[in-house]
Image (cartoon, rainbow, N blue to C red):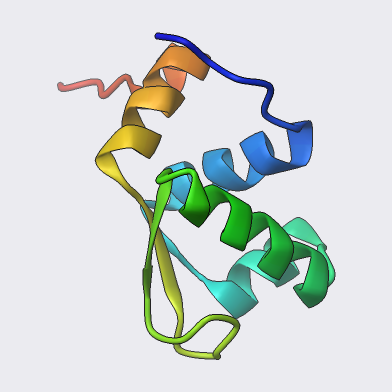
Length: 88
């Protein structure tokens, strides 16, 4: 997989969304301790790259963020261990 440069804070947002299996905008901003304006910029960039899906309005309290299929493939490439599921 060809991976372009992805800033660390962008990758960390993807990782957090992946770990939580989706996130609300406000919860993500709070959990990551990011200013809403900075997070909105990152979300727009990730959405433009096709790595995340948005449900609801941009920056709205009801906005839900989840990884797209492309985003999930990138996460598997970047952090293969984050997608391991153990069955007992």
